[in-house]
Amino acid sequence: MELTLNTPAILFPAISLLMLAYTNRFLALAGLIRNLHTKFLVNRENEKIVMAQLKNLRLRIKLIKYMQGLGVLSIFLCVLCMALLYVNYTIEAQIIFGISLLIFLASLTLSLIEINISTNALELELSDMEQH
Image (tube, rainbow, N blue to C red; front, side, top):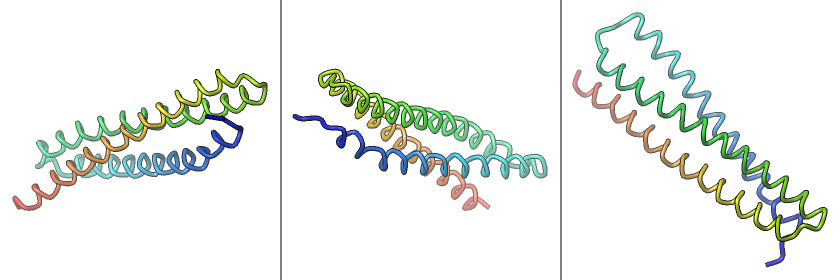
């Protein structure tokens, strides 16, 4: 397989859009936490539900942090790969590009896990409303 400067450059738009999606998720999560905090201070009758949500939110925050970190590392390695190609270190560039793809895959896997946890949190909210 021939690796040219164009190959890692193709990932730039994908990773950039993914990072934007991750940032939007983080901002939505931050808003949710702020709203939950206000509700908790005003109305402490659903402490069990709030504690379950807090545990869920902490895990989601960690996952998003790791997702973003892996996304940044992936794009960093793509840039490094391009620099190595520029100075004709083809084999090293191929290795770095392969690592970048694996890290990008790990970021996507964490994203899938976070989506699953997010839907479980919504199920918790729905079950609480159904009980009332």
